[in-house]
Length: 249
Image 1 (cartoon, rainbow, N blue to C red):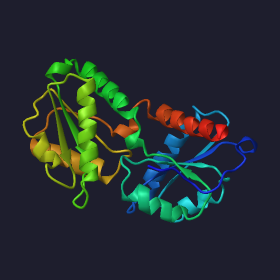
Image 2 (image 1 turned 90 degrees about the horizontal axis):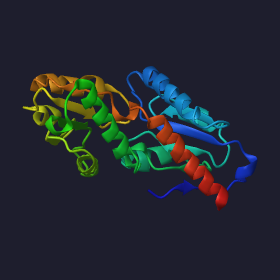
Image 3 (image 1 turned 90 degrees about the vertical axis):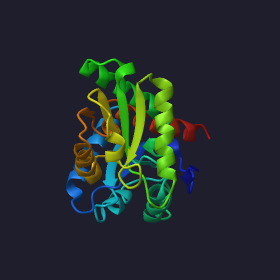
Image 4 (image 1 turned 180 degrees about the vertical axis):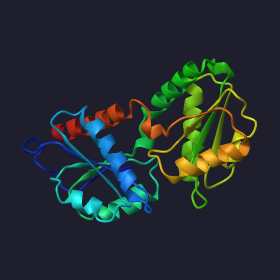
């Protein structure tokens, strides 16, 4: 994704600022806002001296409120799993002509497959299973309008397969076939479902669990990947990389 920087501020004279943005939950924006604020505080713990804030697109006026407090050159971090419509269209439209830099979203970070592999390996160890006898089910969003989300999920599955020698890796979607319940059929007792979502929401608290129940899934359901241990550090490292790069230009 091309980084969107509208002007070059004097970086040395400004305190580092960053804003983490997620979709949120339109029907009930408060819980998602609170959860994202917690994430921002965890990221800030790895970035001494930075001002790290958060805002969801679903909370009316919240993004614009925070944008008014940002200085030129602030980093905008999309807490999304793909460079889809929200990242490439909805978010830039909301940002308008603000002199900020939008970095790549969480889902395309090259370090994320390693983190996911570590998460899955730890889960198998906690369950007392061997990797070679464990089936991994990746539950993703998908889309009925674009092939990009499914391609991203399959690419992620391939990346996991290259890092872990598991019995099988399956991919199921909430909004397209193969649906999560279809992919979960016959996974067996030694199976782990990892939701490929940046943030928890209706899909991960209701749709995915209901699909697993429908399929008779008896394995382990992990929290969404965006809540995995190591994600705050990953985000902080990426922000620091962009800050360092801007200072050398």
